[in-house]
Image 1: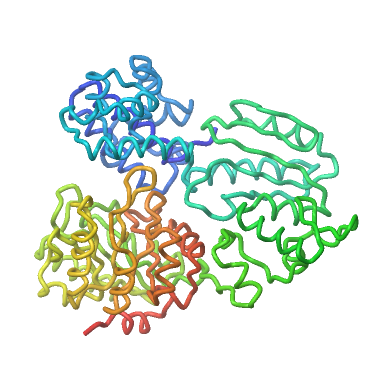
Image 2: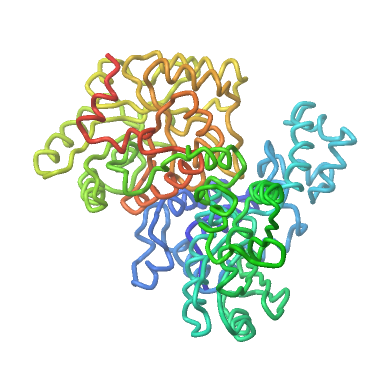
Length: 573
């Protein structure tokens, strides 16, 4: 059974939610919340650590009891304590937590006062204006809740890319072990590297599809077989992720791959282009009359309609077809282009590894440099540094740099942007750093005008370089801040600052659409991991995926520069 750290964290998060709704001891709830944060930031799979006989109770915030629960989750895919607790509540009560503005405390109020225990009942109560008069609610929140119920119903259940990825890797390895299978690839939104995945489209080529289907439905992580045909089958995995398998002949592989990679809008436009040329396009190939003239490869599919090959990440019908026709497709940034990470944390704040350990791990990745960007002292949860502690860190970085060969640690900070736009540290300390990363961690619900002015004022500081996780969103958990993005892009460019594309799987901030707009405004980017330990330095690939979806090239990215070039780019004074 495959279960990722994020899925384990989600189980504990759900347990904490139900305990809070039940009114349990708040310290017990906090313990689970802290464990969630630790697990999400680990990077190394807990399942692998258990296989290697690692004592999980020695991990920060875990302890013996939670370690035992992790072992149970890894072995069974569920937690009996959570399942027992669920039975004491209506089955769909937790769905309320997916609505913006509703946390465990408000869920408890809704449940106890209005007996609301599902999204449908929540929507009805909002439409009847029954919510606005409850303690902690008002008319504005009631309207936001109503909009949230409608949006959630429209979007359906989706999985983070990083959650789907280990399941994809495992099922593809399984299929490759079949002697009847020659090619295996995952198409759909996963291949386009979308930040969330609705379901999986698995394509294989074979001369014996019936045997392939029989083999497929024996995959051990399947909870339910929905359908089993001659050339296709649909199953539901144990984590509720749907997988659609299609077995195709070699001569149609490229056409089927193109069709099921999508997006739908991209494909529709291709078909219209083909029709204008007197051709027909479907999932089996491109046809002129009854004759198939292309379909074995995707390259031939595009070439036949007069286009150069378009990378999957770009296939959203956002101008890529016109660019392909004009020979103006971007040369997308690649993971191999990255020369360093400009947002990392150590034990000096809320990280799990020392500076030396982070440096050695980054060097093993082939980087030339890495910025140490521990938190400034502002919010207690981040264990941030005051100026005395920062100077202590700077001295340690100097000593470590003396011992490093071919690799440089950059002195930096993730400084809090305060509500009034000031930075949480004085210029006396900021001027001693190689670069300054600024981020917002509180007051995220300010009105657009105030939030935008807050950021612009922060960037007025001549030592400010990179705006971290610019919109502060958490995918499916927290909406983006309300910011005038077009004005932001203009002013970032004017000030010589940069925007971060944060590679944390739950952030991926900027999103792909904003990244493309920012690039068009002349903004340059830092693709950074926000790593809190050595394992999550490997999150860089998720940031690169997001950047590629935003049309970002190597030339748009400052951490593809050499160290000397980077220092020149960062210099504002």
